[in-house]
Amino acid sequence: MMTEKKEKVYGKSDLWREASSTPPFCAGCQEPLGAQLILEVIEDLGIEDKTIFLGGGGCVYSLPPMVKLDAMQCPKGRSVSIGSAIKQYLGDDAVVVIYQDDNDTLATGTESMIQTASRGDPVTVIMANIGSYGSTGWQMVSKANAINVPEIGKPNPDFNIDIVDLMREFEGVAYLARGSAHNPESVDTARTYVKAAIQKQIDNAGFSLVDILMACPDGWGMTPAQSLKWVEEEMVSRFPPGEYKSVDQSQKGE
Image (cartoon, rainbow, N blue to C red; front, side, top):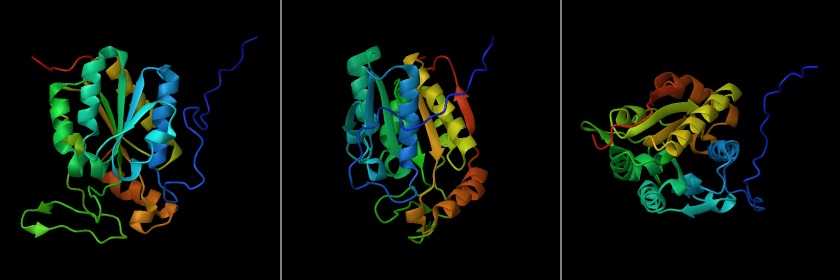
């Protein structure tokens, strides 16, 4: 008698340590969800003993001590450079996964990321994108002669760097995708992108990155439901999710 194969239902990953009595995240924050997807994929691939989890600054700062992996908290904006150095030292014996939010990746870490990607270093970056491209106080770059400073407590009406457009032309990039976390279906899709990105590293294809659009209810001054709607209606419409680049081997060194 044939039994119907049931789809795996995910719960809390076994790779989480016991949480402290004081949660380190704001109500409705989705950045722990990005870490959950990473941990699920690591378990699926059976690479717990090979993985090194690096956390950036900003809102992901507290994550490395919370996971049952070799993990390290890195200086703001420098986790990609540190991950590249670890990968070059350990080689294929390590799977280096770097989790950053957009202020850490783009406000202070752009140079590190560009250099690592241009070399085609086989590390994986997962970026939690809350659309701020800011640091403390929502610092922003200027557009032409106008200074663009969003009002604190409201969603940023503009996004100054599209990481997909920035990274897609680098020959060292083997995998590039954008996901979202505004509903269950989008979360499932984002998980497949994270898995594909880490697999590219395992295959030594080159640099891989997944941008995941996420909500920031506390920072935006919204309820969790309102913030998810804003992600869907504003962020997703302007920055469509999808796989933008996937090659078996990057063109690094050619």
